[in-house]
Amino acid sequence: MMTNASATSSDLRLATIAGASVLLSIVSFALGQAGLVPSGISTIVVLVGISIALRVAWSYAAKSASSPSREKTMLLISSVGLGISGLSVLVSLPRITQGAGIQTFLIDVLAQSWTLGILIVAASPVRTLGWRAFAGAGLTGFLAVTALARFVGVPVLASLGIANVFGSAIWVPITEELFKIIPVAIVLMLALRRTDSRPSALDVMLLGAFTGAGFALYENAALARGSFSLFTNPIVSLFFPSSGQGRAFYWPLAQTGHLVHTALIALAVAFYVFYGRTLRRGWIVPLVAIASVLLEHCSQNAIVVGGVDEVVGKVALVLTLGGYLTMLLLIASVAYVMWFEWRIVGGAFDPITWCLPNASERNRRSKRLARAQTDRAARSICC
Image (cartoon, rainbow, N blue to C red; front, side, top):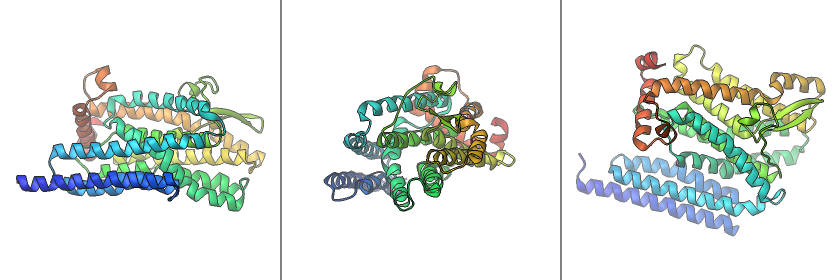
């Protein structure tokens, strides 16, 4: 047992770490706004520094700290990070919305939020993470991931030209999808270190969806685009009103966004990581998701820049079902995994608890999910 002196010392370390995180955030943000540090680097320092480096330091100190202190410290760190990140978004809006205006941006926010709301409702029976995690993922996608994508993408496009197939249709899609999955990978690595409580695969899907939505909001604003329609593409627009429609080689083409792509990859990877050992050839699940996303993303970019001939382009359209493939895969996958994990979580039917699970309910779900993901006997019973 810890003595009062050791508990006080641990709590003091936690307070020091929290103070350091606040100071780092404020200084980085101030330097970025003053132009003394590139805005992208400043944002990455704020988000990555707090969410990863200081998180590691906090975890080390929290091993011997009192539970109330841990909770207060994490709330402080997350609140400061979210507050400064939100302020960064507001400061950046006048600059990135110059092309289409703030109204188009708000319409895009509505479209992305519509899909996120549907996904949240679908995941509610098994959700274990709170709103702060999802808000942080969205802000990370808007600020840090876009900055990282521009950092590696702009020089290549500037060197090769925007119409270059390798730059626009291979390098950009692959690096964007890779960077968007980084927050998901971090969460999965942290989750696998624990055996007493785990998030659901749908939690991870939501993290990917929010990251992709944040990325899409920034990119759409910078490119002066964004729309909301429930009728553009039959059926799928009811779920994804941000999806556009175009034509390629006289064929209709549904244009899927980053939200769908990142959510699908995140869900497939999480399902394999958590439950892959219960499936024969489970590696096929993430392989199909990643291949579908890259085929759709790369082929549509190639068509836009005119870097693919008609035969190859039409083959790609057939394979991606005219741009419907990833949207339909996400709908089917979310429905299946919700049923799959609901059997594990159990509990009585209560719409309020489903949609707004309190900390106790989230903790109960996390423990049951952890048992199913780590205990072979439990997996055979529940899954």
